[in-house]
Image (tube, rainbow, N blue to C red; front, side, top):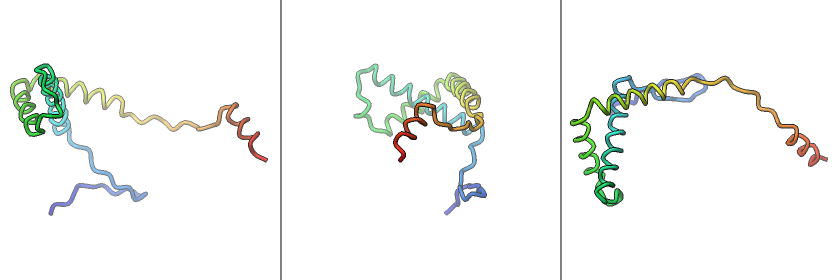
Length: 109
């Protein structure tokens, strides 16, 4: 059995490594194709919960083969947006507001 690719961190937390860019692109393109397939089925009046997952997957794969360029550009835009929002913000001081601090002091003996 193959082992998962993990990184061990000093605090004992184990995290998987990030997927490479091409894998991210393909995953997002599949996700977008599947959402388009769902929308197409809804337009036909078919309720999604009655569709076999395999049928939805096959419809998404067919869409992906037909319109790869469109889905790839959408996925590329999503990846850029995700990367732009993934910048870690500095930790802020967590202080109580004046009203909360006064209320806490009143409840303490």
